[in-house]
Length: 322
Image 1 (cartoon, helix red, strand yellow):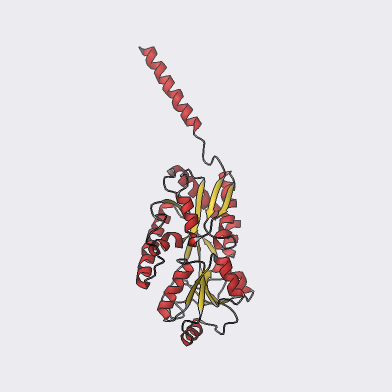
Image 2 (image 1 turned 90 degrees about the horizontal axis):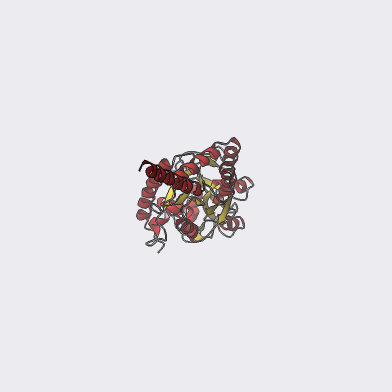
């Protein structure tokens, strides 16, 4: 009897060992990092910088997959439906998870239930820029011009329901002007049209706009931040110019819901390690991305708080996409 029991125990141990050995360690194949916006914008720049460092840390290639469309919804939906094994990840900005859900009566994904937050990557300032040929050099001058020509001036954003759109509407309501919103299919085409003189005003990420501001191809009128930023020390905030409003964008890493907790922890560790690397930190800060290491839990709290904040703003303004 003892012999039979010993044999059964040994067989069970061998079976368990075989099952354990059969489970590949993570990552077992190249990782796809979905960026739900076109190449050339802030998200794409950040995605490619992070992909390189994450690939080194994880000892596996990380490939950026740009999936633009519907203000990020198409790319985000792709990840929501992906296999939750950690080999398809999402790098996106705050709008897709804290703004868009309040704008659409029906969404193809649930921002709070269909994803696991891995960690925040960076915070980014938003700046109000204008075509330098526009005869304004301050927010008050832009407001005066818009009031003198109601419904004649327009502003660009990177899509309906984007951060640039909602910030523009929030500022419009606070200063009492009528600017016409013109949505584009990404940051880069909107900025190109502004620099070509086709559209006069835009709220956009400072990281992508700064080179053009420095080159005189755009004029910065205001920062949508609590404080001024070192790279544009002479540009005042909206608050300094009498508009009680501030908003910062963030970018973060997500995995599909159901991804193993151990994989999320490993990804969070590697993301935070990457954000602490001096060369990456210097590169990010040079383009006005502030590295922001967090735990998965801390990032989740930030998402929930911003979700509630933007829900109130959007309901107050009364914007709906459908």
